Figure 1: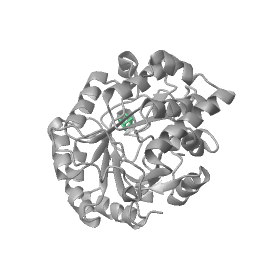
Figure 2: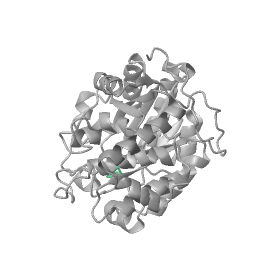
Figure 3: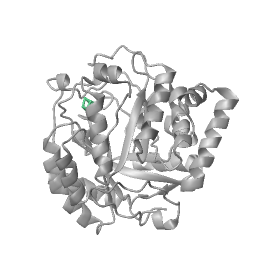
Figure 4: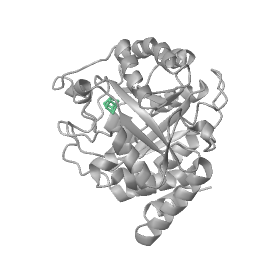
Length: 351
Ligand code: SF4
């Protein structure tokens, strides 16, 4: 089993050795998933947030500069219909951390499930919530939840997020315990973070027993305390993706849009480094322009772009890998997804 030291060494590889690392990661991915890349359809549901992360333009202190929005349940179901029309069976709702999203998403879930005749993965990324709220959303039919710890260094986490790492980890434990397929993730390039810290984040994600993990390069955004901080290193991020694949070959690992923002062919290179998820943006135009994920000039992934990147990497689009797994009961942790890459796991109509 890889430990922190092994991971640190792998993160530092460059040149031919880095290419060998990527090849190992691709082989590990192929063994579990074949050529399939899971395509998700995301809708951003609010740009309001009660948290004040130093790296995020949607932080609480920026609210007065942003024109805020909060979508209602009807709008969410409409957006899910667009995702369904694109033959994507992972409907992903994400938004800032505010309590109101529990009610809105709870209202929308039955309508979303009805659109798909229940053959849909409903993936949420709505921040810390109380356990009973997670339980309610799970009972209504939410399948999976992403909650990134961003950095596993408690002191850096407190400095960057002004929240405790412990509360984040408690939420992750609740989500796992409630039977969600759970994702977490970290940022590469935060102030004061060295390569060993990046390695510790990857090992922490493995030790948490999650089903999905992401690594994204830090992107400095205007109007944030880190606006002048240098961006995260793309090569280090790609190595972190490859190492994540080796740490747990069955993870879903996204090739995030921040890679395309940082580098030409960034998301293509993410897939070549072992990632196996692409997320297509379905947020209605008017709201999307106000979701300041990396500032106003974010990189928006469209369906055609995702398809081109996947094809160029020699891979094929796939549907949710969680739909055919044993349904986990509330209170019974989900089995670790070991989804075989068979046609049965492809979304209807997805080539
Ligand atoms: S990163 Fe998430 S929790 Fe932090 S301020 Fe941005 S939206 Fe809120």
